[in-house]
View 1 (cartoon, rainbow, N blue to C red):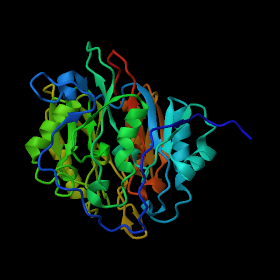
View 2 (cartoon, rainbow, N blue to C red; view 1 turned 135 degrees about the vertical axis):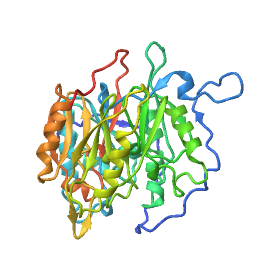
View 3 (cartoon, one colour; view 1 turned 180 degrees about the vertical axis):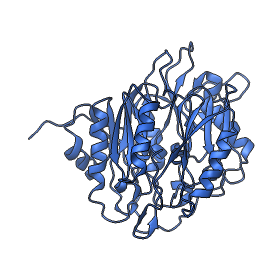
Length: 401
């Protein structure tokens, strides 16, 4: 019998009986207000809970050095249109590529953990962590990791948002609602719990105080009813330590997240953004992406720079079984020394790869077929969660592209 890979048992997380249907589940009571709270956080002496912003935390850019990348092993067959069988192999390939460059931690529980062990348990650099999940999109369910600002002597921390499966679309989600806290506990991190319903794929930062978000997937009746745009923005500033929130719009046809930013616009360096474009005027994505690109070109970041926006063409009318799916090259993932880029065997692949090679000259560009992942309406970025390394220096970003 071959030796087991490291298996770390996290605190027990209750899993409720699984439902067999995918109908809309009753949502949690509406949030009338959002009250930031921090686990073990000190107050400010005036009866107010300390926030990451007040304590000196910031949200790092994805290109900054990582301590690890987290993934959740796939097991929910109904998530993917068509055959589920290839899906674990896609995850395994992503894990193996990443493990050549940085530690990888894979969460699962029970029989699913055994499946993960059989597939990637023997891969050097991979650790299996016993945390139950409802699904496998850890970008959205996992914690958002924070680092201290330069010169501030505090340990890294994490924000755990509330989770309701993209506005109550896919019950049951009970296990996933506990993932962010469980991962943060496993890492021994202080956890901030703002009470806001939000997914990690809805956030994009340059690491210098600018945050890109899409109102369509945050300011909604199914996520944060009655909160209001001003309060939402205030909480994002308080909890992520950002200085300026830039609101964009649009969504890809078939995107059940209601428009996550990691399909639409991505920073590759401070002041520089790649934006999805669809030149095919007959494609339903053409008009909303054109409007979003024009909006991005008008925006100014936290440092007073007008954004340099570089368009990236995405596949036209990418369908499975007559259903258009959100295929986007912008769902790439930046790791230590590597960029994992979704490709679809489409004419747009080579241009996207060349562009990212120019943007990240110090990193290996790894094209990974993503047709299977997009059958679950996600991509490489959606299945990964970066945990930044606790470094005091300012790391290099992407370059001119």
